[in-house]
Length: 442
Image 1 (cartoon, rainbow, N blue to C red):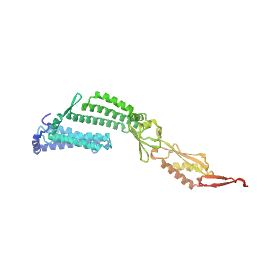
Image 2 (image 1 turned 180 degrees about the vertical axis):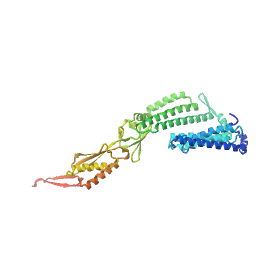
Image 3 (image 1 turned 90 degrees about the vertical axis):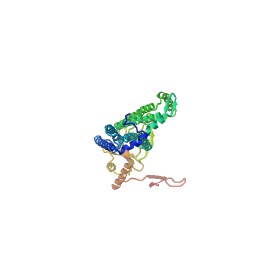
Image 4 (image 1 turned 60 degrees about the vertical axis):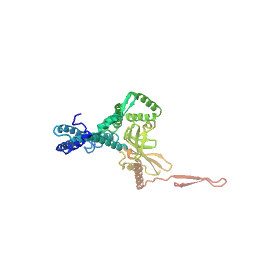
């Protein structure tokens, strides 16, 4: 490492602080400000050119300066500017700016990747604060010259693990390397997921979701293997662990494994897709998301049911929109036997067609379905294309309209009627006399 990049010893800290009072420090500050302006302008121009999704952009973030690209580009410019300014003035400002920018890049990469990969997780905020504190403390230790001293002391604390000698410094460096590898794996998997799910809808959405989950699982597995190698763990020892995991899956984890396998089967077969209207037992709703282990079904009332994927494979599930999103509904109404049949059918069709959610093709149908005990039973059938918006409200609106139209045109909806036969007592004279009584309570 050259003299320009070497950390400042603690004995030279006073001399280094004195360098901030020299005129050369103003030149460094001016060059640093120019680098900030160039990085900010470049990021803004690229953001307008690419117009990324602010919620899912790791490079640009929401405002450009809170993404990864701004501190990374500023760090590159700062390294170049430091190499030029060191030819004319002694370094003072750059000794603070470079470690600070490295810490900022590490924080932005870790935080942004975690936000995209685990959006909305409850543990995300504490992890972000921990990463920020660790990065800034490392930067302060580097600036003050304490970092080499601390690392040298940590290197003296060692222990033997099998045939390998480990130190605290080696363990910390391995954990940092493992974290960096996993962050890169999550970054790549998030980019693949965003690419696959972009403009995806209908039948392709579930298949792309399956490919996205498989790519993330594969990348995290490879990243975990590389991370374990970076920590110093012999991967040949994992063969015993793999056998133990296989035994555990065979006995205690078979349900969990079955759910994961069922999730991939559902996604690849596309027997159930995101956005489908399904009914499982007595719960009906829209498939909101399909995870590797479970599926989220959201009812029109807002309730969400988390269903293990194995249940969707082994039990009977009604998919109301698998091959056709149109759903048939019906309502039954009784009229008096002396009613005008043609008028009744016309009024029923009018009540259905007045509702905008009822499809015109195929058209609704009003049919005389049965000769009831109290009147003629008509069934009004109609098709809708949006069952996810609810069905009870539409049926209620049609029934209310039928009631209004029947009252306007004098069509009678009969009350239930019962006929009672009264027998004379034994030995009494007289004839059996039928007595008719109408009404619901007779």
